Length: 401
Image (tube, rainbow, N blue to C red):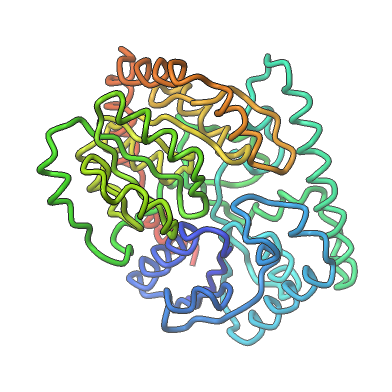
């Protein structure tokens, strides 16, 4: 079967998921082509097709008004995908967090499968980042509703120009003829009106650029914490403050900083801080009592698989929801309480800065001393290990092909 995988460019983790899924499908005998923005051509080498994406407007790690403000840009993306489908002539298109690919696949009359996170699909009963009983729950729900209606309206104007019926909700674009969810039932159960399968986390650690040298970390006798905010966020105020708090608590700190050269230089001379650009995350977890992270699902699930609890500091509502889900299974804790997000991640930074050092330390101590956490992590680790990951996609396609 010839398969075209189209992925969003706003996160390196999405790029790596596409490559991992593609390699697995190739191993099952499929002819795989990849498409995303030219920026990531070097990640795929063969059978790569450069196309535009609405997310290039600001390369935000979360959906923004900028993605949908320019109808011409949306139309350009759909047209490029449609033209590519007609060029490659795939038997199946797989979209990873793409909001235009389903429209292009429908225009070309090609089956469309999606790979996504359950909590961002439509018809959910909960409000992202909030418990139902919380005071500001309705305010957050209203903002998200307004944003989704704006995005849906803009996309539908483009769909109409191509003769395609309107979509009821922009989030429907993340539903496929089959939808593979990279989370798992214990973590989040979707209120689904679509066919889906929980495959769990997609394995990407073997795709990172190089092995990490942990020799200096191995020689350090202090307890260790890993701070990683993903590939999109390296908030200097947050990281600087958290490093100082962890040093004050007697920890050594492993930092994954991406391209933040200024922070790497700042901490390079401190013998208890180990700054990296990229890191073999699973290996680093072997040294750590806990991880401080942004709440990205891949990060969380790799930590839980290693039975490492997480302190979660989000940058958008989906990550905040992941914090709530981590708390619900006693594998993690949110650093800041539910916060109304209206498009600017600074609301989380502001809430964090309102906490005193003692309040932050109290949350850390609560996390590492939680009596239910060890047992829960042992159970969830086994759940994750039994999930098929990218192999689940290949197995399903093998059955229906």
